[in-house]
Image (cartoon, rainbow, N blue to C red):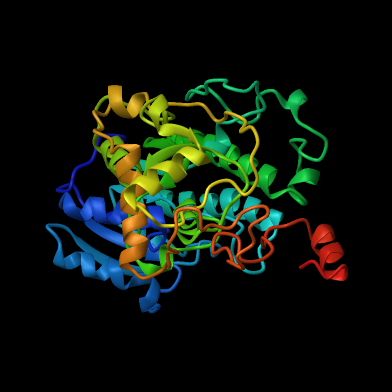
Length: 391
């Protein structure tokens, strides 16, 4: 194997999780830059989830073929990866699928990544692997306002962790957040070690709050940040939150630039976060931007007023200095996210600037971001909630 940079003329590339929000944008970016893309999806015959991918063949100059690959099955990627020079691994078990559990989130990260790596090594042709990790692998317990960098790992400051969030497998079985952080940390370190041993280069990207245009109606998914923007458009107020915004198009562009760069090496990480402090804001500031974009519409803000904990604080570094990324602005990300949801007819707005649901103003609006109990929840807690009629 070789760890040399790749380009569109070197051979095909594979993208796992291609039907997903980030995966779809990776495929689109690669097609626009002339790559032959093998898009790996759960079910290539599910046109609702995949038609937007095959439609990219009409954009060019690159091309797309669909490949049904179950990431939990050994060898599922062997055929799709054969002859590929680059792999973009964006598939993951997020915990928002029916029947998910915290343990499935953990296994869907590390175990699935091991199977991806087996198929990469079987291909023998891959030069670059770009792994979509998460800021969940970066952020660790810290003081408010602490600045995270690519040197930050989620397993730092373990003694700061509160009860019920300790960093161990017993907690993984009950706590989705710890399960997700642990699987991302371990998967990152695994791919770097395996790539080093096999003679190719692997890189990690760690996105934070990814928003921007959706490419298919199926991208309006529960517990996805692009869907939370939709809730705000519809007037559903959520608990306070500190946003660290990165545009989904920049996440995709950065991954291609990583694969093509001659200036990086195996094991390098890239935090995909706000360009500067202007891209980090409390939820009421996101609300104000949407109110300016859609005057007279009942855009939601915080469900209940109070102080927002300022974290995670982290800004773009290597994507700018090493790769030359020209990022979108937070305004563009918010605007294009909202416009695409409206274009697809996935949200309905309410007239009246103050006409939005919050504490003391129940309008009967149902959240599309959190429409029901989160699937990957502690099984014991779920059973208790069901018994109490709260689930």
